[in-house]
Amino acid sequence: MKNLTLVIAGVLFSATLFAQSNLEKVFKDGYNISGVYHLSKTVTIYDQSVTQVNFEFLEGSNKLNVYYDASSSPFYIETNSTFKRYYATCGVFFENASSAFGGRLMQLEEGVFIALAGGSNAYVSNGECDNFVFKDPNNDIIILGKNKDRVKEIAENSDLLKKLTEESAIRYCQALKCVLAGKYPFPDPGMKDAKLSAEALVAVQAHATTAGWTQKIEYCYIKGKEWTIITDKATGAIKGRTMRMIAVLKNANGACQWEEVEVKQDYNGSAYGKTYYSGNTQAIITIDCAEAMKHK
Image (cartoon, rainbow, N blue to C red; front, side, top):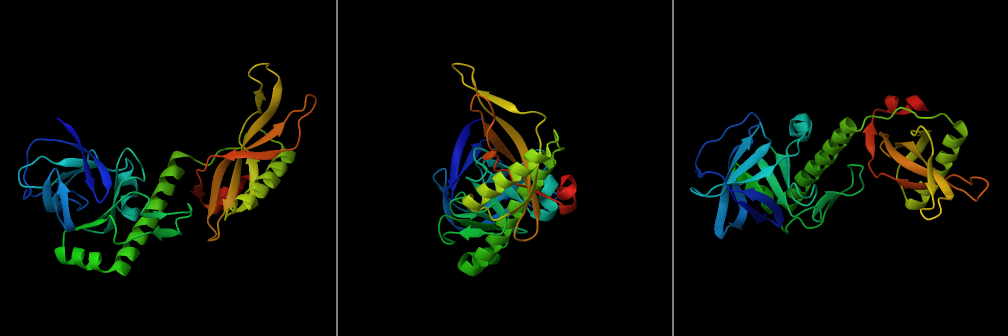
């Protein structure tokens, strides 16, 4: 077994050689991903000019073997480990394991994929799954499809290509939000301090205004069970304290979200000062609004 790398449309994929196989071999899977795909343009793979590839999707391991000629071994691309979880509603997204956004093979429609040259070319920019950017529909992309005529139609129609890619990118963004929501459930409140919660809300709202957040901050509640004391490493003197909070948000579309934030109070030697915003995780989790408001 030998590790190699491959670049298609500027996308770097991990590659591992397997036993020899055949471009014409018929592969099947329960998601109708496997099969021969025509490329919208000729690409070079290991010094060979390639116009079509054969997909073998391995459902058990969520890997996609890609055969590129009649005799050579395939390279493989791994899917997100949550593939089966969001496939039914969000489609198929194969990613380069070394960078979640740096190499992506996205399903535009059944039997059609697009290989993107990383997040620099097409992406959802604001974390809200509604602001799509497609910098150059004609640069560094490859359309792969089972129907050669459909591949040609999409590749030659920039408006159609943009529309399908935008819809796929939004589904991808929504899929990641679903994954995050499952991985990070809405936290239970920690210690009770109504005054601190109110001060935190003012502090987070002030930061949100300065930073240009598009969401409205509905309320904040305390996640931590106690303050984290910050001390001087050299002297051990107390410098301040921080507390983890949950900020509950609502975006312009009325969707509810939450994010973990941190507030801080500096210590002057005798008392703690004003509560102010000191950071956030940047992991914004979508949540049902009824659930989101239960700690208000």
